[in-house]
Image (cartoon, rainbow, N blue to C red):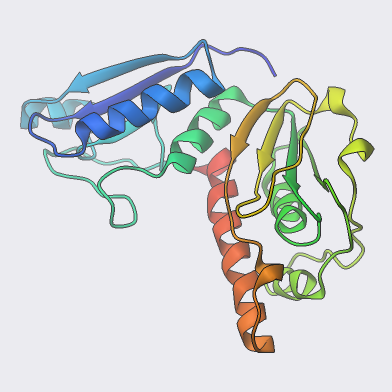
Length: 235
């Protein structure tokens, strides 16, 4: 992965209650993922200026001129929300910067490599551009959960032949981006040189209850993973 020039802009208007928090979020995330990134705060003060630059509401974040949600519009002076919140989620800012870095080898990690990372690997492979390699692994690999196989089939992806792998099974030199998915557990350690993102998602395999409740947990994890992974290439 090469160090591309990266410009991250936070567009706001005066008085926006979420401007400072968003600027602080971007200022924390951008240098962590891309030390070469330049972060700018841009004040939009007139409707004419908003229309001129396609301002989508305050706060808006752009990475190399591209909106982090991939939205476009004519522009207006208005407040903006992200899934009902005034500040974009950290993972969305991460995904937009990761997209600009154009990784060529992505590794998803959790503990057992039985559910979250397996689903993430399969979803990413279905979306990744040509030439991008995707793997998954765990610190204590077990076996792929049947519920994961079931819910992935619901979206047309077959992982029935997938096997759980350990971190040591991955060729570190080919990985330039690692995304850890553990939440309540201790995340696996990957010693290779890479950009690192952390998406804390509850392990659906840990959910107890009826068959319907357990499958529902896997469906929610699958849908959240797909929402985030889409942003890596199609946001």
